[in-house]
Image 1 (tube, rainbow, N blue to C red):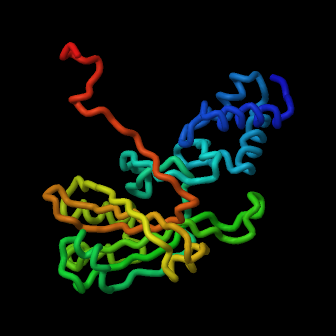
Image 2 (image 1 turned 90 degrees about the vertical axis):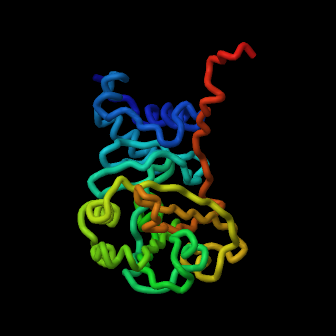
Image 3 (image 1 turned 180 degrees about the vertical axis):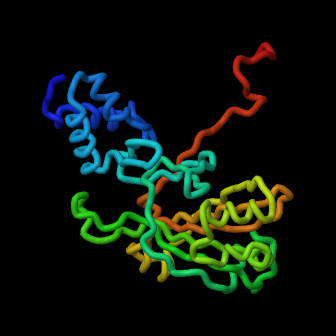
Length: 264
């Protein structure tokens, strides 16, 4: 084993990331595996990965490894499958995994009219509201002197769900979160679909995301439904349009299957 300058290892990986050989979301080899491939010490690879983290090109993810980020600095709103870990279901994206910065608690209130429509309830009907801000916490080692709010995330659950699944009204609904509690009580598997729209930042959005009032905002509304089609939750999220981009695969339909068999 040799011990070359870790900056050279980091520079090679950086070039492969910038050239898109390693796309955002790609998982780099484990430290031991890459060290063996390169014939270097594991400590060299560990320092190289640390340099890439400081350049905001990669990020360690629990149960996944070292994941490549988008070198443009934008986070991707990748439309991929719902995944699951020890904390429950989540939608994996190609960007950073954002952390909870502030939880505004669980309260009862009225859903916005468009959310009430998605929940198939009457306008003004009482719902359970779970409101929080996600982002990147203060980290001097990575050059962040203060928290960076990135996502406003508000969950709305209709009153009938709260009555049948009381745990959704708790700040901590237990292992697996509200989705596990809903599936355990009302039956699963749950299904999801997403609606994405654009709007200008409101005064509240501007303040909580620290962006200008003239900023474009992407709004994602993820609707959760039971097997019988009844909606049980709307996750309403807002992100700054200059910090996120939408990226998703476009699958071929059966009519576009390859190779063609119709002779055309």
